[in-house]
View (spheres, helix red, strand yellow):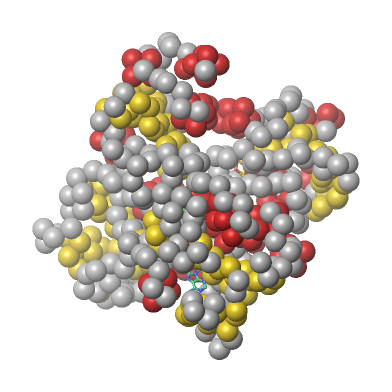
Amino acid sequence: MRRIVIIGAGQAGLQLAESLRKGGHDGELYLIGDERWPPYQRPPLSKKYLAEDFADARLFFRPLEHYTRLNVDLRLATRATAIERAAQRVALANGESLGYDGLALTTGTRVRPLPVPGAAHPAVHYLRGLDDAQALKQRLAGARRVVVIGGGFIGLEVAATARHADCEVHVVEALDRLMARVMPPVVSDFFATLHRAHGTQLHLGAQVAAIEPAADGSVEVRLGDGSGLPADLVVAGIGVLPNQELAVAAGLACDNGIVVDEYARTSDPLIVAAGDCTVHRNLRYELPHRLESVQNAVDQAKVAAASLLGQAQPYADLPWFWSDQYEVKLQIAGLSAGHDSHVLRGEPSAAGFSVYYFRQGRLIAVDSLNRPAEHMLARRLLSGGTHVLPAQAADPAFDLKALLVAT
Amino acid sequence: MPKVTFIDAAGSSRVINIPAGWSLMEGAVQNDVTGIAAECGGGCACATCHVFVAPEWIGKLPEKSPAENDLLECTAVSRTPASRLSCQIPMSDALDGLVVHLPERQT
Ligand SMILES: Cc1cc2nc3c(=O)[nH]c(=O)nc-3n(C[C@H](O)[C@H](O)[C@H](O)COP(=O)(O)OP(=O)(O)OC[C@H]3O[C@@H](n4cnc5c(N)ncnc54)[C@H](O)[C@@H]3O)c2cc1C
Ligand code: FES
């Protein structure tokens, strides 16, 4: 292949570029990103970056020389505006048009805007990129009262950081428990207790009706029941939308994400996609799904690169994820969606415990809290398809590692 | 700024200045030291920032956390007593002159 163009210079885009070079692509390689920053780490944005004095440069995956060394034409602050599939060209916002022999879409997601009156107020912030994080950090420095809308991973990480900065913090969540989309009640309850113990007020099952401006530049977050929460800073973390518009306009199959098969191929054989923007198949799971994780960005990008190089290998890596809130590290191995039973290993406490999920008697996922060794063991058990009985998982005295050796 | 020598699996070495307060991993990555993947960006969650610390430096580094110790079980190249995760080593002037070896691979 002579020229490969990658649209989206994030974690998946960078991995694709590196894997293409490693896999032998010696033709031209373009990495097009609409942000002004070279590819950078997002996870620290809601964690260390927000909490500490943390130089932006520490977030960058690679220095600029790296791209020169790999002979990657990195275009920053450059937006791709259209894909012309018949002509095999990508149009850029600066008027340029790039022909391609292979194309990769790694456009990620963007935040879902808060759909209530007054949400455009400058006190309302979101967190997806470094620009957002800089603005949020600046506003946080002068804030005393913070309202986080959305009790998901990012909202809760921000809430923990804001408490750390001694702000008064409220979390408003529409559902009746935290992280409800991906966590069982026992884990939600554990985190609710943790956040309350640190002085955060949780408003579960509460709707935000409006953001009302107050006299001094602050706002009042009006809840559905009519009550109001005064805030100097509002952080909305209510989910993301896949950046699929380019693909939709080009006629590629999309369904809440760019649809790809287990080889990361879109409905056009010359175009692959990877990372947060995809709805994909993983050989481990029956249903296609969209994942927002470092693991998926990295592993799926490797699959996509191999497909472009004609060395197709199916995507079958085990999903994993982590979230840091206060002194608790939550680590997830596998996907628990579709489980029909679960057991606890250890009692819910900050000292650590895990939840093992089963489907038709087969272990499909493990959530570990402050149990990093168990998380890593779970990854090995799940990757290898080791048979674990619920009773074995639930018995802290039973040595799960022994099962690994046995198979 | 503390200086660190990175020696890759083939034996070639590079000396790099890393600002105090940064992690060893961040210093390596920002200087394009190949051989450190750091997929999780210092989250102590991926074990792809593995280094072998030169014998004379092992005892001078800050202690491993239990999490780091556990994660070291999962490195691509098996751990030795010299193994550390470079994202868990904050640089300080006391580490000026540190020497670390890079494993052959991280994934
Ligand atoms: C605050 C925060 C905390 C997180 N914490 C964790 C965590 O603890 N653990 C974990 O596993 N994951 C975490 N994640 C998720 C993880 O960062 C993402 O899954 C990962 O960054 C996805 O990589 P990506 O390359 O698919 O998308 P992105 O990193 O979003 O990159 C996509 C890039 O494409 C650009 N782009 C889009 N459209 C165009 C266009 N038309 N032209 C040019 N460029 C375009 C975007 O601007 C963006 O720069 C977190 C994310 C955030 C925001
Ligand atoms: S960078 Fe992931 S564990 Fe060090």
